Length: 398
Image (cartoon, rainbow, N blue to C red; front, side, top):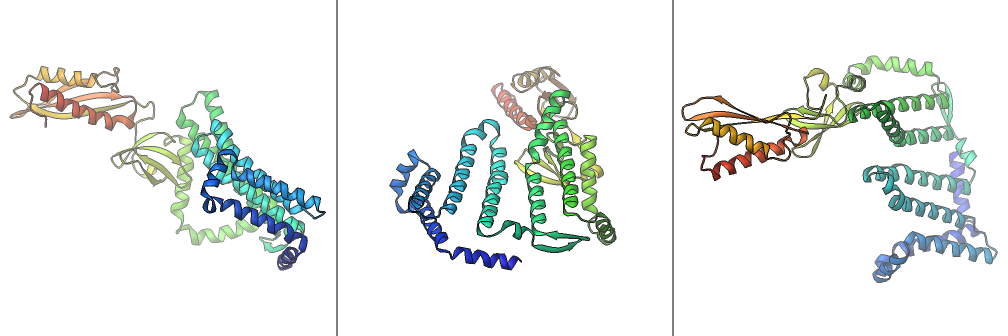
């Protein structure tokens, strides 16, 4: 049946009225999209007033009027007008309306993963319907899967819905999580956990719907899964362990999106908690680390944002014994208090920690409002200590 439909498309393209419409459309498209290379100056002047997509739409409308005036068929030209109009509408949404509602990354994902694939799907389906019978094409059998006869239409419909669910699932999950955050006055980390759980639930509902829509015998699926579980259990047990760990972390809330953790001696921030791994952003070099979820169950984890984001930091240094400890302690406190990002409460603390032969050891402790800036504040204070000591004639600390 599929071969018959494909041969029917070839016969359709050989018709005179079809070629009379397709050839001008093809020449228009080639001329406009090669215009910047063939006529650079004219293309620049044209873009100042009209986008090329709008010029193409106007040319297609004129072609449809010409064919209608000469008594020729123009159905394919009308389809091309629809495609160009939708393409132009998506471009207007991307550059005018969506920037007011969405961030650049979310806008780019919405356009590239949802709107443009929808347009492409509509173009393919409408062309298939114009060239033949879309209903007959959808009824092409694909065999019996798990005790149920599957045709091409069912499979395409299920794949399309699952793709839309996978791509568009973030929008309703984000909206609902923000609503719950406002109603219950939750933290950002809790909101991110709720968003991830909603994504898992919606994906599970989508998979169940797909199996029911295809009419798959669930008993057969369970029988096959049971047979494969023994052989694959040892090979992919780590994958299942990470998936279970990810769900547990979300439910427990011990590792949430937005939290700041100490991972392998580096300050990192949880970007995304996925089904298999957690993505951490390392602040020192702006690198993203992909850490299996099971790691957070087998090793201890230090978090700086469990109750609040305040972090206590310290600097240890040694100064010559010939300088009075009271003077050094007061000087260290003053240097830390002068930094704009050091918090007044809890206050700055400087202590004499140990005696030595020629050097006394001191410790300066201070608080910053965000653990991600602790490293930068520490570097600033070290530089300020060196500058202040140098201006007072004190030897550089060790």
